[in-house]
Length: 198
Image 1 (spheres, rainbow, N blue to C red):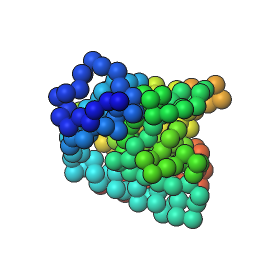
Image 2 (image 1 turned 180 degrees about the horizontal axis):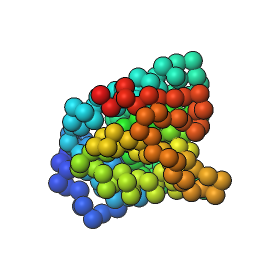
Image 3 (image 1 turned 90 degrees about the horizontal axis):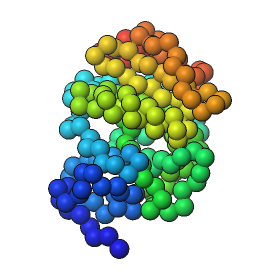
Image 4 (image 1 turned 135 degrees about the vertical axis):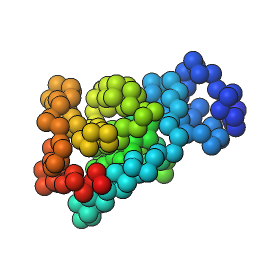
């Protein structure tokens, strides 16, 4: 059995870890695991990032108030695995991420530790320190794991880039949203972005 780790420097940056290892980490720094590899999360998000997140969260909260789907915000562990297989145990899970916001419709995916399986909607807000991870690694990860809709929020350009999973399991990029954002999987959800990017 692995030992509890209280110092992030005791981790091998080139090592491969599982969710079982992740559960033994007891230090302040926040990490994500993507296919077993450690990714340090950016320091506390800046004020604008937080305002955008809060504004999106408010819109989604109102829309989902009487809806069976549930909204969660970071820090909230989402344990992912290839959508073609099912995870058996913590040692079989090599990916744990904390999206800025996510919506989960299948209550069976929720447990006391977070979400096990792909959320229906994931929203990531780009920050200077995390843009490459969000734009490349997480795009491929969310596509592979079956996240039905993915919004990439660019706070520098006041735009949202929505992606929807097609029938072949590949993301299709929709028209970038700069004024109004319409959800594909929640057709009645419309967000006026001038009230988000304030």
